Length: 222
Image (cartoon, rainbow, N blue to C red; front, side, top):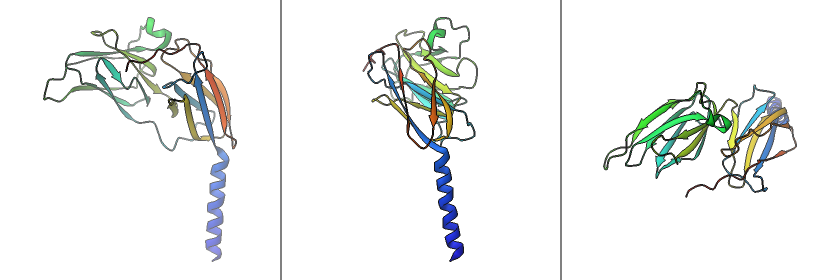
């Protein structure tokens, strides 16, 4: 009986200890007019890098070329992830990558280039895979097509395991972050100039940060 009580007490102490070093953070991203921004990437860099999220970023992702669009428009993966591109259109497409932001206008370090044949009726779509583990594809990358200049998509390869895309309401929520200081980095496709880093303090009280862009993002094609 005493052993059971001791075991129960130790388990309770363990839970309390875990609670003590873990905290939650909500980051709200708004545009220049104060309206919520969807699909901004929020990256948290805690001072304590020994703790990892319970749910890691996906090690694989699929980006479809469909109706002259990259779907999803923004993909978030960890560095080293494998990304598969699939052409579901009946005509050929390219996939070319270059650094996003101001670097996209002077891309001396191109990431990769693919060509995918159009999908023939009754046959499987053509696909190709790349691994995001080299310079030029780490961080924010702009995706385009040499054949169809209006096509744009983005993939963000995060070096921090603590990263998320904002919801329709403009929120990114992080749970069980390591206690202590952290930096908040925000990237958004139309924000060409980097948003300044913000500081956050993670503890038992819910932390909240608001990050405002200097642009109003373009509306997506439906």
